[in-house]
Image 1 (cartoon, rainbow, N blue to C red):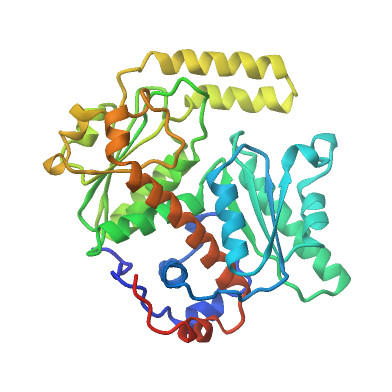
Image 2: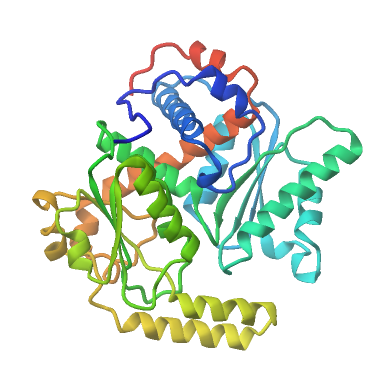
Length: 386
C-alpha cells in the first residue's frame, strides 16, 4: 500500500517535519524522505487553497528569488515567478547564456555570485547527461562556502527546476494533480509512462526518469514503454524497481505502447532522446563541437521518425481502464505527433490544471525552506475550501 496519505483537502503538515525542512534544498526527489514529501504536498495544498480563497501568503516580503535557466522554459519560469510573487518575494530571472559559464566560470563561482544577492535560487540545466545535477550541487556548495566565509547566517536553498536526471517541480506537480484526481491514493493503480514520437528536438530524459522514481514510491503499478534504443539511465531504473518493491507497487518495462496503455488509469506519453545519441552529445558538448551537436540532433530526429506510430490517439485511449484514463503531459506537447488533436482537445483543461499545480509546489518549496514558524502561518489562514 501507499506509504504517503493523499487527503482530499489539505491536512495540517507535521510541525516537526516542517521545522526540519527549514533551509532544505530540493535537488532530487530521492533526496527527500516520505515524511518530507508528505509535508511538502500538504503545504502546496494549503497554498493553493489560500490562493483560491483570496487569502494572502505574503510571508517573505522583499526577499529575492533568483532563477537561472540554461534552457528554454515557459511553464517553469512562469511558475517560479508566480510562486515567488505570491509569497511577496521578488523574482529575478537570469538567462544562462548571459553568465560567464561558457568562459570558464565554475558552478561554485556562479553559485557564490548569485547566492550573495539572493534568498533562494532555482536552476534549470537539463540538456547534457551527467552535467546538470553535478552543476547544481557545485552551485549549492559555492553558495554555502561564500556565506560561511563572510559570516552570513542567511540560508539560500536551491531548487532543481530540471536537470539531466530529474524534474522535481514537474513530477511533484504531476503527483499533486494525480492525488486530486485519485483521492484514495495511487496504490494499485496502473500508470503508463511511455515514449511518444516528436519531430521537434531530442528532449531530455529527466521527466520520465523523475516520474518512474517518484510514482513508484506511492504503490502505483508503473509501466515504462519505449522503442528499443530509448532506454533511461540505469540508476533511475534501479531506483524505480527498488521503490516499487518497498511500496507494494510494481515497475515493469516493455517496448509496446498498446501494452502500456491497456487497463491504465493514467497515461503520460512523452518524447525523449535516444540514449546512445544523448551520450554522444556529452562528448560533442565537451569539445564545444557545434557542428557535431547539430549532426547528432539530426540523427536523433531521424531515429524518432522511425517510430511515428508511437502516438497517444483515440484508439490507444480506448485501451485504458473504461477508455477513460487521465491524460498527462508536462507541455508543450507536439500535437499530431505525441498526441492526437482530439485527445488533446478532450484533456485541454486537465493538462492546464496539471500545469497550474507547479506554482503551488514551488510556493511550498520556498515556504518550507524560508518561512519562520510556517505551521503557525498556515494555521492563521483558517478554514479553507478547495
